[in-house]
Image (cartoon, rainbow, N blue to C red; front, side):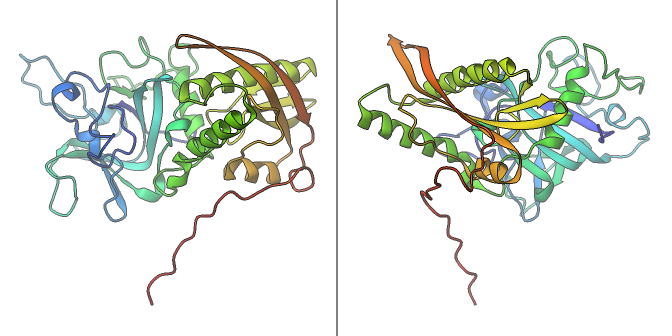
Length: 357
């Protein structure tokens, strides 16, 4: 873990964190304050020239305490004296999602963390909402919703009542990251450092990838007269079902298998005799004549040794609101030489207009 200054903070859940807009009016699941009011994290990923100005709620002393509500900078950097801020901090934002529980939604690298709440100045476009974090846009990532799957534990050693998790104890001693109580911290930082997926701050198409795939898959399902329209719930079940089948397949071939779908642009890492094989997994109710690939998936297949595992003809039954999956036929291409095997068809283009002369 290369970062020595790390801060985990829990905030309310939003899609864009760029102000109130239709369908994304205010943070959800952010505690009692967000029920009546709107938390300051509403602007955590609002672009203001080259920067982002974020907010999290520090630990609040009891109501009868005369201690101010401030960020404990010494628990971020024990060498801090009376400074008003700490620089070069990795700030990881955690929130509760409807589908996967408590997950990472984004992060700032090399951020400034302020001890006290800062008032928004004119021109920051945050209205009356303050901040206690500052970072460059180019060093920050906001995950598309479909990539918000990396879970963070709750309870002892993680997030309890407080919305902050520090790397150090109150006495400045660094926590034992090898212990079962705190090993999730290093794992989460490794996830952030190795993430290679889309970033909503620079490419909004990352959020549309799954929607496009669902629409096309639903059209093909309707045309074939088999299966159900693909909803987010059904898509999740098909994905999990197909990945579980793929894991069994490669384990039978004596690979050690790791599910990395929440962190990489592919689904499985399979290791045998010191050789790494990346596996792209696709599941479909159709006969599997074709599959939808995202740009990241195509780039990975062109760059690395990859296998393609397709589970097609999956049977889906529905009892009231519950789906039950069964069956499926496997088709495996290993090695998958995407430039030579099969045929890629471009579905659409993103065209960037030239700057005005």
